[in-house]
Length: 627
Image (cartoon, rainbow, N blue to C red; front, side, top):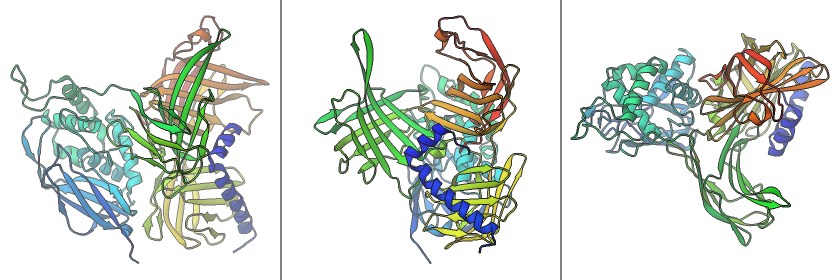
């Protein structure tokens, strides 16, 4: 994607820009060389999880390879679930994507409270990648919907992997109006009176079946949208206590439905020592941030604010500890910094070997525990902090995305996290970031053959006969690699990505030709920014549109436009009434989290203390490519 000066500074600070700058320089060299004619067995993966529709006891869980978008050869023997629905099995690392299916067994139905047998002829499914170490894989009706959705999207001959299924998870969550941060693959469902969000969703599935939707239809479908109305009705019945079981003064026949989760709650607790002092966050002093186009995977911020008055001026003081996880390391690499604006506690910073342990976020609201050992820093920081925020995103991987991939490296599935793509009349580049932090960067100069550099297990370079083609049709770019040898790596497969698009126009401000976008999530707030080509500095029209939403509802829109030598700012949104700006109307965010539609949306010029005056209107839509 294109870069502005501000983004350059921020990304450089994270270290990501320097890495990509080196890659870009090497790519330019490779492209120039091309134009001139230059030229066993491994460890295992332990997979564990639960089979839940209530917990299913005695289910058979079997693992298979994935071949042409379907179940392939078996990987070892099947295992049985215990009374809690738990299972554990082991597969070789080189197995690629692992197809998991559960059949048979019994569970207590959440809607009726009756023992029920899981159909033996229609399995519940899940899918994970075998990359070594351990992997979590829940098997539920919702993971089954996600696997079948991924297969339907990919087509008959594509190779579905965990990345495709996680993208399908997002689609399922959107279609059923469930929290987008809910990890259906790795989160353990909790059912019954203390159900988490996952458990509540499964209870709604049971209620939906009790109200007449066949379970077989759910388990065989690749389109959760067909159940959206029935699911919503079932959710209302579960949360309102009016389910299908017979109630009355004597109680219901099933478990008591859980109370709905209060949206957008934030909490922070714990303490750390900094030097000879200590820091504790305020009760709601926690933020979790993820965003595209930055060099980090996730950032946790714990803070405490206080106010004091000096010469009749109110000053806000802040203490904050920020823990950041990099996107570009094979294993999680955490850094941290501590700052106290009052100077009471010393500043502290650690950029490597920081002795930071962060729990994998689990549960319906993903509480995260950060433990600092204080072994390497300008000032030792030791202790444990816990932060939580409902409806937040907790990883770069949870950002809306359009990238799909069937890429293989040395015969093993290579999971693609994101692609940075840029194309001009003279040079096209595609930097493909893999899940292990490696980069496969492709460059094509004009009509010359494409070249490639891989910086994974050592640096590899291909400058001729690389077997790479890049093509774009209807806004979708396809990168195809056919036996591409880069150093010791051979790549095979395709990667496709959507483009940023806009039909946005304003009689007063002109049009927006969007060429890149950024998406940022802070707790339950998302901001999507669509921007024009920043090199067209003398072209009139809309230069950027930033749309802020909270829990899926648009709360603010900020538009910048150029007219001659002037830069205009127009806005709508909550909390801006003192500037003569009214709330937004006629604007909506799509379920995909990337599409925003405008219908005669009124924008206002800021007039401090004045009455709102419409200064422009917007119509059309914008679509972000995402990560």
